[in-house]
Image (cartoon, rainbow, N blue to C red; front, top):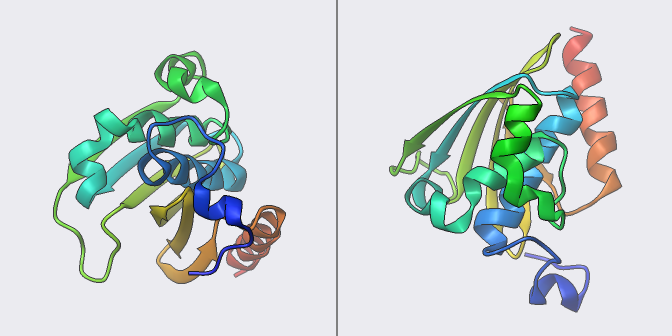
Length: 165
């Protein structure tokens, strides 16, 4: 794994308690929010260690916060359930402690919808607040969510290509 600065190794500025189970999971949810805009419905499946420790590490609040457009450093992540209710976000959590073959132990699968579109996204939070997306709508990909604005242009290009077929 390659890091841009020593601060990436020390850890991100984030709402805690865990860079891998909280900060990285926020960014996966936010990726879906950035793709769809306002998410109206979502089924969230936590695999492996996320399924076992989601409550203590705040992974449930983290993914909801990201789906609502919050970033890992936003203290409102702690209030994600109330914010989801206020936003009429319908959500369903599922948990599978078995890890699918070839997947990272901190894998999350999101089936999310807006008023006009549905997307299926699988990602993993790999530690230090770093996460990546490795599948979108059944297509394998490798998108590092630690690359800031570059990710938005990649997502827009993938979305455009997928909808022009």
